[in-house]
Amino acid sequence: MKRLLALVVVAASSFAFADEANVASAQPAVAQYDYSTNLDIAKVISLSTIPNVCEVVPATMIYEDHQGQRHTIEYRAMGDGCSQG
Image 1 (cartoon, one colour):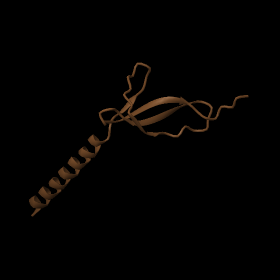
Image 2 (cartoon, helix red, strand yellow; image 1 turned 60 degrees about the horizontal axis):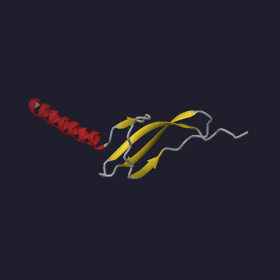
Image 3 (tube, helix red, strand yellow; image 1 turned 120 degrees about the horizontal axis):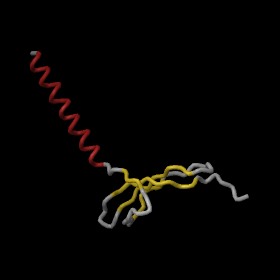
Image 4 (cartoon, helix red, strand yellow; image 1 turned 90 degrees about the vertical axis):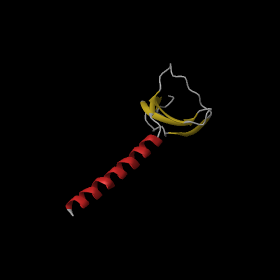
């Protein structure tokens, strides 16, 4: 009986691990943007909200390329809190 219980636990954990691996592979890796990065942007899906601070902050863009592949890229942007005065 203990062997059967151990086998059931191992099988269940194997299925859970396989499902977790499928979810992880479905999400695109986050790339870091720099000036040498060649971007193929056909459609912007979303842009992160830029905070109301006067400093450089991290930002994220999710986009689709011309082949329909979805990409996530991180970049640095100036916050929206700087006054023109």
